[in-house]
Length: 402
Image (cartoon, rainbow, N blue to C red):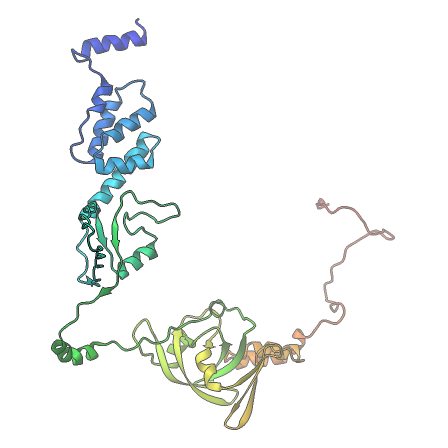
């Protein structure tokens, strides 16, 4: 039985080529024919037979066989292994392909700047020779909108890579970033198209609807107050919120009250909704929204109609003048000396449940503060101890049932 090394030599003599060439030389002469992936596959097929080659040598042989427009970029990255070099080569190949397929720039002409006049040489001095032409470098034209988009995405203006501290483009380039002037239309065409332009103008966008996040989560903040309101005969609980811009109403309540929204499927706005707060009648505009806890949210759009407001957040009162008389509202949960059963009734004042109200009034003693120990019951439980036994002061642990 021969050794493994002798067995490999015998296999090469029996099945190998008649002339054994150098695999290292074959890797160095491997041609680049089509794509990076094809070159990488053929390189690995040959490299697996090149014995005793380090990872650094394989990487340098692979990078050396790449075309110049890819090899320079990969060399600047200084890959330490073959897989990293192949990754960079495929990435730079895609970038080169994308740059070749770049669409032509938009129809805009840059602002023409007059060329500076050459300085007139003094009389008798020999004329200066013509300057040498500048090197042929790529010239990119980016409109202000394109520059703004690239700056928003954090990309370089030239090489489409992330623009981070220390970034250096691989090639020098010219970037024209002057002001752009849109091609002016003839005066006659502009005058004729003026009515069509005015007709095509879209209406001004409405103010954005902003609702406080705490209001959606059902959390009362210091700048809010709860008030009982009545909308079309139904008692609801409204939140006066300075963090919300408009008035919002539960979507199911709008459907139950028969309020017809307008504005499409996504924007359900109902105008001239009658609302009554402690006898004061108002007409508001509501936006249908799935609120988490509150029935209604009255925002700045409603508070602005009240004029000057005196709002005491400690006492939970709000006062203002209307039609020559002073109106003062007190929020639900205000710190006033009221009975516990009255606080329970105020907390459920938003629900139209008269039977529950009468039930709470009949059993008001349940909500009173406890006085002393509970009364005796027909079946009282006690701990049976031996007569004269002192209280046991030991560490608590589980006792057996017996």
